[in-house]
Length: 382
Image (tube, rainbow, N blue to C red):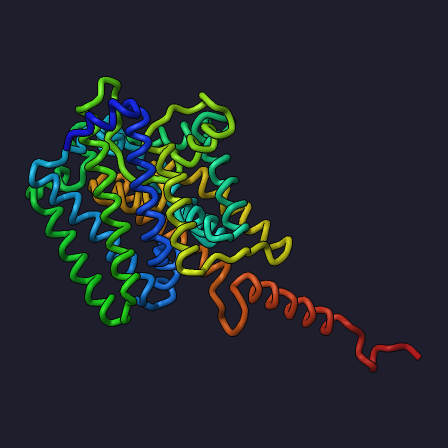
């Protein structure tokens, strides 16, 4: 597709940002209406259910994978120069960052993308957590936390010697990615029908995955129509959140690009979807302890997302659709970290979480020891 007219009107950077804005609006609309959320899917799965949340995530993931791989197979897309498949990948960052991010999204009750969507609907908890997430991501990228990130990420590197893309690494055929996407889609459709998903759940979940494909397609076509280098990329929210925050706080602090258009677009799309569906509602923190929980969650996600090379969307959908080895490792680590955190912090056993049960057990043991040490009537001196 030729973007020459738009480039003439808005310039190269402006057109790239405009594409991010439009795709972001559509992403935000679909995500808000479908209630797409990796955290909810992971929690549902680890609690022994494959319900609506898992079905929605599977539909989104399979649409992103099948669509991206179909375009690559048809020679309509080339993502070999994308950041996820070029240079080198960090396996240590993927594992540690993925676990941190997964834990953080359970504590903050949403990944970076989900927090952005919720913030647009009036959720002040999500707004606060999202801003802190962006600030920590910026500190991890270029600020005080960057040396620690570099150290962890550099511990175990996977170099570009033909081993950054999973299908090539395993020696599978060119169309394997399409087949994997279609199999995932079949499983997703089965569980979608079984769980009686609503129309918006079907449309929205597939729509979110399609926006990942759209991001790849748009930036790829822009990459060979501009004089300035344009990064081939798609939906992700860790780096873009940090760049967008810096763009609005310090004009000129971040270049106008796809990422800077994406984040406001998702916010606008989510707000409009909530407005027309009459689901706008102001929500705040319940108490101080819950606020502490969200703070830790946002910090974990900001650092973890930068280590993992992407968030639940960036690694889980965009990186997954590209079959980046580090992205798939990061996604698995996110599922593991989220499941472990839910088990230790949130999951209820007889009305108590595991920490509550542990403290209760300690209290009973201490009371028993005190009772045993107390003098009996026979030993009391009259």
